[in-house]
Structures are given as structure tokens and as C-alpha cells.
Amino acid sequence: MKEILVRSFSGLLYVSLLIFSLYNKHVFILLFFLFGLICLAELKKLIQYKSFVPFIVFTVLYGVFGYWQFVMKSNDGLIEATQILQVITIFVQLFLIKDLFTEKNIPLFISKKIIITTFYLSSGFVFLVLIANYHQTFSPLIILGAFILVWTNDTFAYLVGKNFGKQKLFPSISPKKTVEGFLGGLFFASVASYFIATFTETLSFNHWLILSIIISVFGTLGDLIESKFKRQANVKDSGIIMPGHGGLLDRFDSIIFAAPFIYLFLRIINYVS
Image (tube, rainbow, N blue to C red; front, side, top):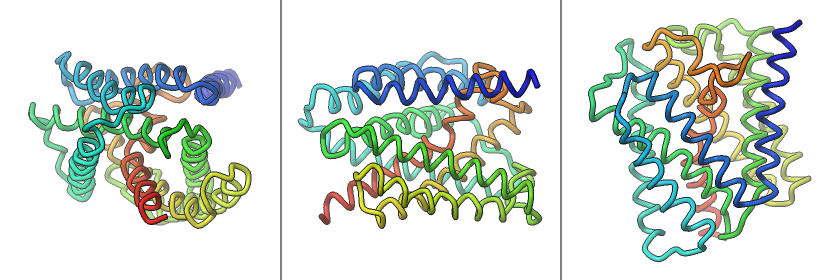
């Protein structure tokens, strides 16, 4: 009972902080900067990277691509740079997805560690901020909707998998994840997209439906990639900052991996509309 209470309290605190930050763009920028630093510290520990350089890189990327466009409302020379960052980030993520389909460990030589901390994590937080800056104005309901889809997918993937799961998804990486659980999470995230579209009045239902698929697929892949990092490090959780949940990266692994693809889709619908 005590463990359930501790887990519930830490989870409620995390969700409350996130929702509270959506009321003010400056609070949002600051909170996600702190979240990013914590997640980066946890990732560095997982991949055994002791250098301080990733913190400098994260601060520069977050400041230039996130804060400067978001708060200063300046896009001078940054639109093209953001597109380049997005292409490189997605390219790196595709290689990480490829690593899921091999029994070998993800190679963690020094240049790979730099690439992972920069284009897997740091740029993931940059794109979270850019999603919240959709249409060049603070759009808290869009980023909130994305988080709700992640939470819905994770919750029902667990419930469906636990009760009906038989076929393992990636048994060598995450033995508890099942195909049935993945499909259950995808289905209920799709259902949730209707209510998000109805009550937020931000994007059309069709757009939210596509986003639910993007988030379910790439969020699950992000979860699996972090699980592989943890398995290589021989640890259960990325950290201990959230009692009953583990580390903060355990809560952000899905959304930061899906963020570049979410932002890409938002750019596409903005371009064609």
C-alpha cells in the first residue's frame, strides 16, 4: 500500500508540474530545460559518458532553437537550421531503430555517445518546445494533447498486454511488452484523439488521429530503445528521482523520440493548409 501511495504521489506531482507549466510560456521553457538536464544526466549514466560537454551542447541547442524562436520570436536564419537539425535527428533515430533488430549491444564508442546525447535526447527536447510553439505562438493544448496520447498509449498497452498479451514484441529487450499490448495502446490512443480534437479545438480529428498513430509507433520505439540502453547498463530504471517510477527519462523516453516526427507532421499540415 505504501509503495502504491508513493508511486501515485510522485506521478501526480510530475503531471501537476507539467500541466502547471502550460499556463505560462516562460515557466514551460524553464521547466522543460530542467527536465532535459535531468534526463541528460540519467542518459549519460546509462551509456557511461562522463564528459560535461553534453550539458553545454544541450544548453546551446535548447537556447538557440528553442528559447530564441519561442520567446524572442526571431527566426532569422533558424528556419533552415531547424530543418537541418530535424533531418539529422530523424536520421540518427532511424539508426537507433535499426539497433533494435540486432542481438548485439548498441555500440557506445565516444563519437556514438556524442551523437546519442545530441540527436537522441537534446534535439528531442528542442522539438518538444517547437511543438508548443506551433503557428509561432504558444500552443499549450497541442503539447498537452501529445502527452495525453503518450499516457493513454502507455496505460492501455500495459493493461491490454497484462491481461491479453501472448505474443512478445521484443522479448530480448523488454520481455513484458506484447504485440497485443501495442495494438491495444494504439487503439485507445486513436479513441483518445477524438476527444482531444473535440475539446481542444486545435487540430482536426483526422490530424489528431494521425498524430496518435505517430505517437504510438514512435513512442513505443523510443521506449524500447531506452530499455535497450538500460539492459546494456544492467539497470531496471534510468534513475531514482521519481519514487515508484524510476528516472525522469523513463517518463520522457517515448515523447522525446516521437517529438521530431510530431513536429514534422505539424510542419507538413501547416505547409499544405
